[in-house]
Length: 332
Image (tube, rainbow, N blue to C red; front, side, top):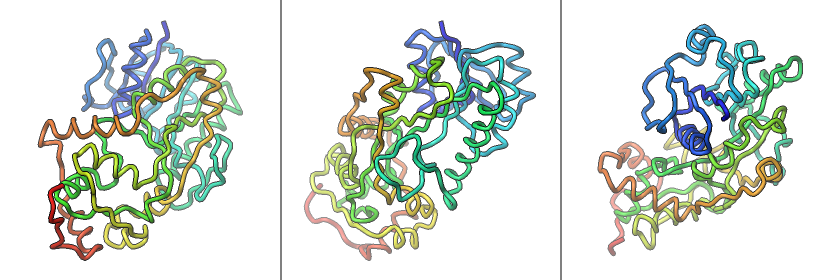
């Protein structure tokens, strides 16, 4: 039985990975600073500590050894700086969860694990690159058993994979136009969290993965128009009003979206998944986005408390489009 330690791991993809690991017979321990907001899979041992504190981790873990340690919450170098010293010798593998946002934009497609990493503006991706470099140095200069995993855009039933979230769904159902960046044709892969977990868990404790970086991304390539249309269909809207605007014009009205739109979502992204397929033979995603979109709408429609509409975003869209009083005459 594999012993796996998750540092964090109670979020969207971590919780799915923990459930999959338990289902595959692993012994899973998660360390979180507070009670997880998401349900933790039955059989998972829970410990409380700040995973960014080497002293607290040492206090709750002692000298316990693990086949794999997975860090889900390393965002800046100080979050991971002490981990090579803490886990070298006590972990058969240390898996750092990074992001596919580290790759330079615009990119030579398809992207592989060896594609250039560069992000001078988008702070989240820039800091993830710095964490990767720090941990890679520990791998090169000592016995630190590093694997880097880079998830792509991953969602589950709780997460609408649009910056506008439920506000877009509400506008579609009300016959109001929804803003889509660019011309809506840039390509973007999505992956359900269950599929991510099925690809990810076999990497844990896998010796061939040590020293490697692995991109785990969806194989279904959609345009941003298609993503909106799939959500509209799941919401019962046959002909949603999609309105295209440049990333620059959108962020004039919604400045909080600037980094993500201008340095991430606006670019078409395609990935070569050969390394993942070689390390996890036989894996293939099983959840189409049309099915995933239906899960999303079923979940949100089941409880009005989950339907959070952003009033300020509505105003920003209306100002951008000049359609404050526009309504579709026919029913959606």
